[in-house]
Image (cartoon, rainbow, N blue to C red; front, top):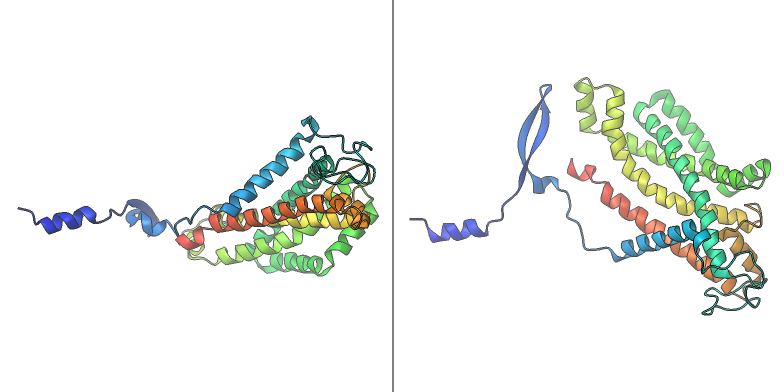
Length: 315
């Protein structure tokens, strides 16, 4: 006969799932059973409403930017007298009109198109170039680290806006030149973050074990170090996009960004700064869209780092 108390205890005892973990021992891999729960890291928290709102807002802005030429309900953003000049927000003009009677909602949507088309390539190139330089400096060290760190420190010591202004002034005002200017600004900061992450993981036990087992540096770099650096770079990419949008807006505000008739959030704000008392909606509506986008990029970047940076917790 089985003791009823033992049966009850066995029934209510939670079953801990297990899985095989291959551990290198003596130059060979040996399979060992480990608790899956102990390797699962911290449990996911509740649904982050701010995250999903941010993702939804970014998806909406991106969809508007991509589909702007095919959205039939949008007015021509450069057509004057689409409504009465300086008309406040209404059902016919959601964001009102500017001094020339142009529809501000249409201009905000088209402004996102050019602002994001500048920020996207700038951050993409910055992540690739800065990430490669930073990882190489952090992993190899020595003279590579010395050269990369020196260049990065000099670049970061320069005032960012003045440096971008110098580049645009020398090369001229155009979409390509503004993109080059903000790209050059993004590379040093991303390289420094990538270097710090590479230094952090290059000193870890699994890298030391891989070196001891005779693994070559390309395998260690691409299979052990780089996968741990990528989550931080992915998170920084969202934050960097916000910074690049602000940088382009700053250039537009002082009149050295992409010229008219091209539309960016920055030159819309620059055009509305002198009408804040008479027609505040000209600057506040587009400024609100820009602010919400920057906040969404920050939320997504922070949450992405928290969710993807899991290897440190599992080691």
